[in-house]
Image 1 (spheres, rainbow, N blue to C red):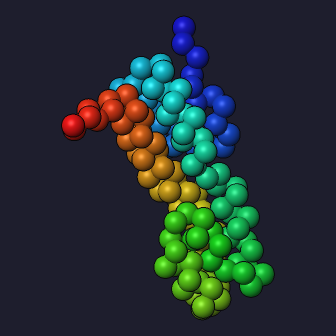
Image 2: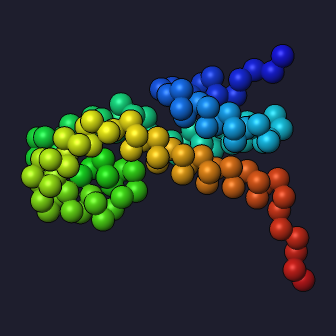
Length: 125
C-alpha cells in the first residue's frame, strides 16, 4: 500500500485535495514526490490569506492580492483603501476561493516542472 503523498500538506480543502489527486493520477511515485515537494513551497494556506485580508480592515488593504499574484488589484486596493473596504470585505468572504484559484495555478505550474524534469529536452548541437 502506497502512502498518500499529500498527507503532509496542511489545510487542504476537499476541492484542492480532489484536484491534486487528478494531477497525481498520471504520475509515478517519484514524480508524485517531486510534485508535492515543489507544490508545497508554492501553495498558500487559506488561513494565511484570511489574516492578510483582515489587515485590510486596519488600513493596509491589498496585501492578500499581492501574495496571490494579483499585483494590479493589490495596487488598486492600496490606492482606494480596499475599494472603500467593500473589496476587502468581499475578499474576506471569498478568501478560500481566491486561495484555491491561486493554488490551482501553482499546482499546474508544479506539474509542468515535474514533467520537464522527467523528460529533459535533448541537446540541440
